[in-house]
Amino acid sequence: MKNAVASGLIIGILSGLWLFIMRWAGYTMFGDNVAPIEYISILIPIIGLFLGVWSYREHQLGGQMGFLEALVQSLKILFIAGIVAVACGIIYTNYVEVQHNARDFSGRLFGALLIGVLSSLAVSLLLMTRGSKVD
Image 1 (cartoon, rainbow, N blue to C red):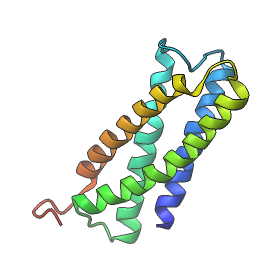
Image 2: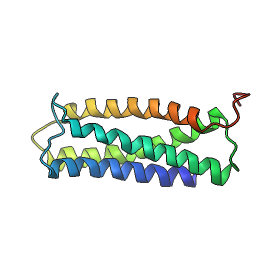
Image 3: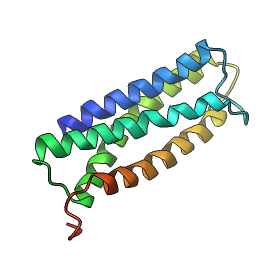
Image 4: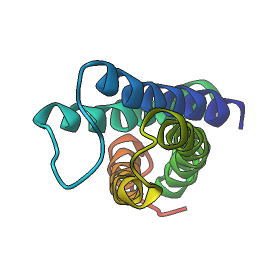
């Protein structure tokens, strides 16, 4: 669980910082318009999740991990990252972008949830080593 907390905090903090960095760079994160540079934020959970699950496999499981073990670990990481990222998003919508409401931001949160679930499945498939059985 220690690995999930550490990896989740890193992903959540980086995702939260991304909001403020984009605002500092002059991009607003509301409405239907998406700047192409915003798609770079997808790399934060994908890379963080891959490194977190890989570290769990190598350091705690001795290099052997099944699909379900990887999936459970990745969902733990994403749950913790989601809590931190949503907290940063609430701070962002209440204090930085006050003129917009949370409804505009909720669409981006749903997109982040979808990316998280898809990346957790992909990372679990990439990092499993015991493919002969499911678990």
